[in-house]
Length: 557
Image 1 (cartoon, rainbow, N blue to C red):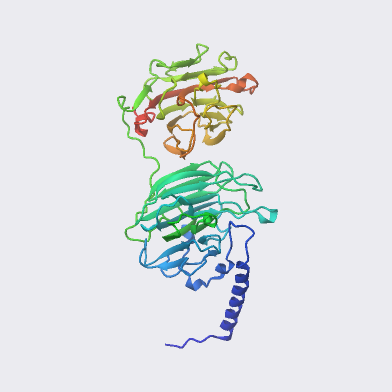
Image 2 (cartoon, one colour):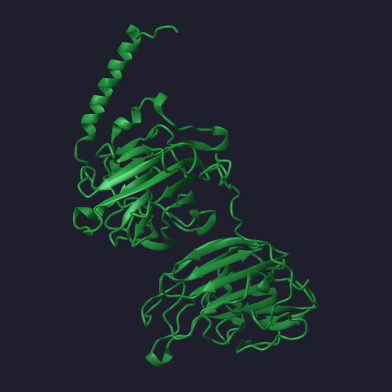
């Protein structure tokens, strides 16, 4: 074997590397202006020959760490001691090693954290992340939270913006995973940003937890956030903000961050140890299969979960699931509320039909002002906290574009009139504006709602003409963070809001209404739009025990 010797050039490179390391090392020891983050710049010049990480441009993979022999190449290394982040060969998800994180109460150098972080700016607007974590039985319950994964956001320091809490973080509180979310559309964020917390379930010990996160970062309503845990979709937030309005997009960090240890601690919890493996970061083109933890293992299950299964075509189970089913073959059916002012307002028509021999034709004219410019049929206010709804609508080509909105399906809420509460806008309404479906949402935790609650509007896509649009809506009403709202359009999940408020704090739950309500006609109208005509068919209202298949429009075909 030929003896290896260092050439003069190699020695010069080594001296330069040491000089750079020393210079960056001094900088990394200086106190950061914010307690949110301290960069360890030396991590950015780690010897690439010692990195157990791979990239694959063709599959969209930006980095992959198997932790078989080394911790890999990280831009930020918030490590206080030799035990903070070390390779372990006893507990692994795949391969022969994993990363063991340990944080002790005395580790205050980096603000009570042991973390490895990605470089800001590497990930663009859309990205995929995969990782697995393992918590030993000694990882006991603690009411003081710790972050195990965060997606931090570098502020626009050149504009004077300060560090803030991360826009997205997976944390643990009292032996339960929680998801903390923040966003801000302002160019410069100031003050503390309101946080929304979702419960993601219990922390299972002595097993590997596999995670996949898909994010399209946005400070407006174009954001996407999907999270799978152990191959099950547990978070799906589409057309919702999930980031700050910064020049760069959020970047990935993993480890342990227990910020409250600076002020308090649980006497029985003075140390945190857990394991991480199979960390993959991919671009927007990566996809689920390319980042799923353990995909390199012969036993890995890499098929992504299916969000929506096509419904089995069966008639509704009236005894168990369906409360009311309207086929509109010969009559309007029984309704508690009939907001009908003219003979043309609501009629059975054989001109268009989704199934059977007829459909319901709604017509509203600009002159129909008797009931506030509406033609609607409504359910009786009731006690169903959870329900399923299915219906189909058809818009002829004459249903022209109009910037003045109209509601075509709403879930109104009867106020507590005995307490002096007044009527408000509906907590949930499906409308049309400028030839696009919109979803308007409101909620209020106050016992008595005063004024109009803040509205959130989602864009649900274009109004397709001369075809039937099939809708399924599943709701669990709540004014707190236990609510559920799922909406499918033409068999595709377009809204999924779980563990979020979606109602008012009323004695009865919201009730369903269908038809046309064009309230702004009282004040203004588009000259070319003086009449609205469209069709509804296959309307089903189901109990909590119903399923997608029980209410899906056209199941009787």
